[in-house]
Structure formats: C-alpha cells, structure tokens
Image 1 (cartoon, rainbow, N blue to C red):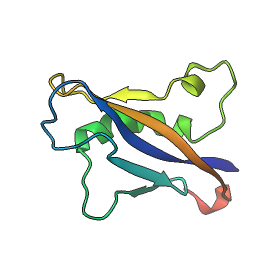
Image 2: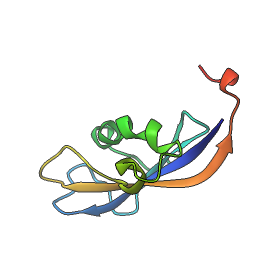
Image 3: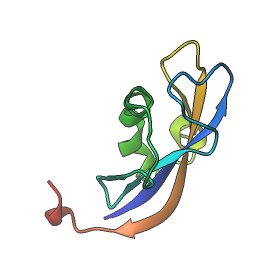
Image 4: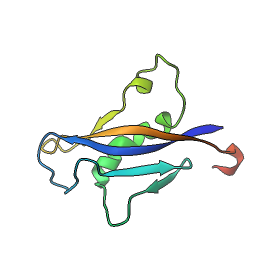
Length: 101
C-alpha cells in the first residue's frame, strides 16, 4: 500500500502564542506512524491532539471531490492563540500492510 508522509506546520498565529510556538514550527509523521519533532524544538500537545484525528485520512489518496483532499488547515483548541496549522504531504511511501498492525 502507499501512504503519504506528512509535515504539520504552524501556518499562522492570529492571537498570542501562549505555548511558545512560532510560525514555521513543525512536526512530521513518517512511515505510517513515526512522529518526528526537530531536535531542540517542541510542539504543543494540545495542537497535536487537534490535528491527530485527520492524519490517517491525509496519509491516503482521497477521491478528488472529498473535502479533506482540498482542506489542509486545522486550528489549535486554545481560543486565545488562534494557532493555525497546515498539513502538507511530503512524499509517498510504499509499505507492506503485513508489517503494520
């Protein structure tokens, strides 16, 4: 099967950054389930929690008319921050489903 690796990037902050994140901060989801944060950086657990439910679908090629195929923005649940993240597909990888759980 083929899945996309993903990069989740802070696209903009429309409020104040309480958690200390900045525009351009990111984490990656690779090889189906490996979460990677750049060394020396952090990513707010609440922002990760907000985007997590969408990631399995964004890893897959969806039908052209599917709303999730076109929409790539997710907001953090903190109303004062109004931190907006962008989900980017970075590469397509081939995996054997028998190697995954």
